[in-house]
Length: 105
Image (cartoon, rainbow, N blue to C red; front, side, top):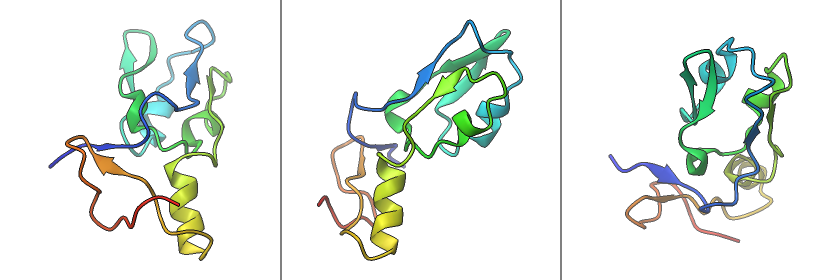
């Protein structure tokens, strides 16, 4: 199965490794495995897979993670479900429109 990608190199996700306590909650709550543990702390392993849902930042007790939730693919999917748009620009890494997606608006 092809990996979903969104718009390359535009994700607002940031990780301050100095503030990270290494609790691993961000890894647990991320729906797309964007983060992984690296020894004592977290690291970003697949930034372009981030849908900017904000789960990691919301659950980070040390505020080591920041992301502008509501600007990425998650917002597009929610807005489409509410009738405020066509859908998401999600494509697979081979450039094909992902199943169930109707394109960009």
